[in-house]
Image (tube, rainbow, N blue to C red; front, top):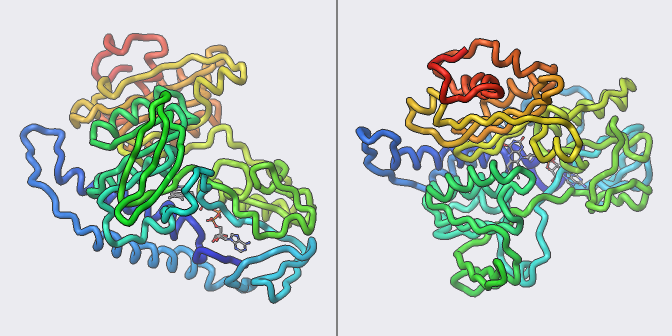
Length: 438
Ligand SMILES: Cc1cc2nc3c(=O)[nH]c(=O)nc-3n(C[C@H](O)[C@H](O)[C@H](O)COP(=O)(O)OP(=O)(O)OC[C@H]3O[C@@H](n4cnc5c(N)ncnc54)[C@H](O)[C@@H]3O)c2cc1C
């Protein structure tokens, strides 16, 4: 195993999932110390020791990197771990750090991805941050501009805003989470704006500049020039695969136009003994998909099982508050693929769990094929809504019908009951349902 750049464990544990989720929870604790959903419960405020939050985060990352990665592989009999950059010399040989050669019968490329830096005049000359550098800053940025409106940008924006940084999120597309429908994006954007986050969409970036006090982003919105200014700038405009250092050309390893390694359904590249998995191929970029792909690629490479991964019911979560979660297709995708569909959307104001919590932000949306009654997709915007998505993913995967969901018992009062209510309301008006509707 050859790993350069990040520590072993790669993005997720070191500079991705783990630090971001830790800071999101810290931000949430700060938020709840200042905001209550109950008029009779009056919070007394919060003292945020930002440097401590970051140093504790560093400790957590170090602990998990050791326990979940280094300790796990410590007993592996046939594993040699090398620190350094790998490049191909020929189909069966790599060069590590430009010096030592290693040969193998088979290779798995899992080199991941890093922030894509957009081509905006002045950006290269600016001291911008990425997720790698931001999470280690112990001195709290007073203000932060975030370029990007995908899930990573949104999660970081809310976490840092709640920790006391003045955050402005700037997005080129018409709405955040550009691949999702407007209804999902608008719901989330509304709640984030209500908290005080500044979000601007539909921008054309003109230039970025820096003086010794601040960073300026000049952009155009509907023909009008707008200038945004902050102490720090985070670039979070998507990711690009780490394939530039592999010397792919030298061995004729085919890449896509975006630089991903081209693989077939069995994760095999155009060179028969080279497989690839994770963020360096053009599949959904999550740690659980990367791990699943890695395992599948190795099985295919060594035992020829010919396994293909089916992403039809893939669940995913945006860890904002409220969270956004999805599985399967949405209306746009069903439309584009000419699949008949019908939507049932239940607002959280109609879900007892949310009503009693005085927190009715969001909705649960189910999408079914009316010809078969099978669930084909789901979108949720809800506090901790991510916890609901796996059951819907399983329903899609195993062809469970909406009627079967409607006929199941859901504990009263759980947020999950919203799924039953959404299933029932394909044919009924939710306002007419009794408590614990069946
Ligand atoms: C801020 C953030 C938050 C995220 N949150 C989540 C989340 O909550 N849940 C989730 O599922 N996913 C999340 N992700 C995505 C997830 O981290 C990635 O999808 C996942 O880590 C990809 O794994 P990988 O093994 O493909 O690549 P990586 O984890 O990136 O590992 C690739 C490794 O290869 C090294 N490398 C690159 N080129 C070479 C070379 N030529 N030679 C040797 N080594 C090389 C890299 O430096 C790196 O160490 C998040 C990502 C970010 C940035």
